[in-house]
Each structure stands twice: as structure tokens, then as C-alpha cells.
Image 1 (tube, rainbow, N blue to C red):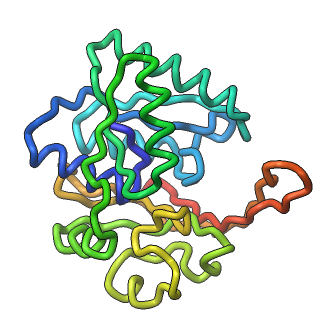
Image 2 (image 1 turned 180 degrees about the vertical axis):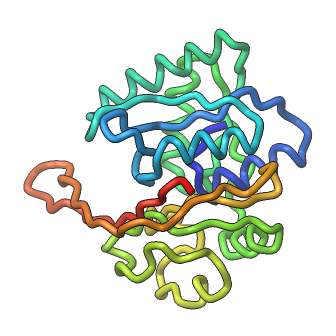
Length: 226
């Protein structure tokens, strides 16, 4: 199970449990090895480990440098995929919903390792999904927002009806275009809630892909283990 610690992966895991079709042996997460945080979410690895303990499934990580190039990322990903295959893994589950190019990329690369990709949430209505997420008792906090889509005030907010009502037009309610990322701290798949405290909100700008393209800025809400 490809696990970011956020709402889509948590709901995907829930759907997989409910279906009864899979035995999930590992939660797999990309981690910034320099800072010990989940890539692009900025959540501390210790809180990620707390989620894995609450779920009762071992955590595996793809350890990456600060800003890895595509070649570095693919090498690390394929190394881990081959390692997990030796444990008997035959499928990889993802919480992607409608990003066709990303789905095709995952399928192509993992097929090289002999692993099939499964997308339990694929093409589902994102507004219905986020309502289901809330109605099932999941609780999550926004830990990262893309300044192109949302301002700083959304960072650190709890995902609830008020949050959804406040989203500007054009922003996907599940943040499927990378508008925001979240950390799930309570869920039906957890044995107990994850204790944490809100820390500072920090701003970070990432370099553009090249050719003089401007970078993109993100606000991160630091979460501290309680």
C-alpha cells in the first residue's frame, strides 16, 4: 500500500480492507532522508511510524535526497519495489483518483518489477469521496498547501464541512491536482488516534523544472508528536 499518511491513501486502505481482496504486508512511503519527513507533505517520520503502529502494518520507506532528480527517484523506487517483491508482494495499491499520466507512469515502471498496480478510488467523484471520508469518521489536518491554489490560512485546518465550503472555485475537494496535502490522525483503520500538536507554519519555495520556469511555493504546518 503506497502510503502518504494523507486522506486519499487512508481511504484507499479502508476500501482495500472492506473489499477483503488483499493481504497488505507493508505501507510504503517516500521520505526525505535529510530532514526525516514525508516527501511533499513535510510530516515527521515519527508521526508516520505512529500511523503504521496504529494500523498494525509494517512501514517501509523509499529514502530520498532533498530534491531528487527523476533518475535518482526511479532508481530508489525500483530498488524498493524489487526488495518488496522478495517478500512476496505482487500488487501495489495507490490512492490516485484521476491523474491519467501518473497512473500510466506507475503502471509502466512497476510492471518492470513484475508488480501490478491497483487503484481502488480511480475515477470516483472527489466531492462524494471527501464526504464519505468525513462521514466514516476519518479526521485529517492540512499540512501543506500550494500557494498557486490556496493561501496560508488553509494550512493547519481540519478537513470538515467548513473547510470544503471555503475552498475556492477550481480547487478539487480532494486536492487531486496537488492543491493541498493532509495528515490523517483518526480513522476507522486506526486502533487509536494519533496524538500531535500544531507547530509553526513555514514557507518553502521549490525550484522550477528548468528553462527559466519559476518555482512553486508551499506552506507547511509542522506537526509535533504529543
